[in-house]
Image (cartoon, rainbow, N blue to C red):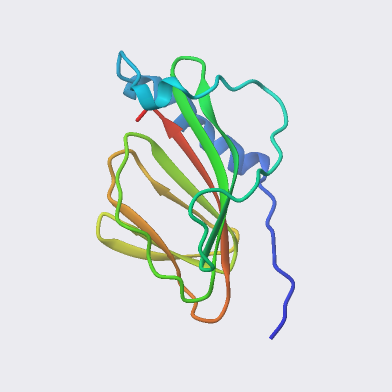
Length: 156
């Protein structure tokens, strides 16, 4: 069955819901940045188009970065989109010093946080707060899943 992918718009209300994370981020920042983040460029206000596919691309997973860098007050910010093929298995379980948010654009995403798995549908958002074990997978065996990720917090 062919259907047009739905791409819900991020509303001002949705964006406003993210602002407390940005405001709270300095409280979690260590005094020194690691060497890995020292090479990240300082981010400036402006437009960031979708970048080319990056990383080890597999037929089951394709990601495109919009930005990755450092905001004032030593806050790391990353934004990218990912598309998972139907039936794509879960990513490895991870946890970070930063928080991650997933906005599902198309399909259904299986989000596991601290051992609890939830299914998110297009237009819904999931959050893994800093330090939370988490993993994502395509919840469908027949439809692709695409989502937008925002990661914000201290340098890794």
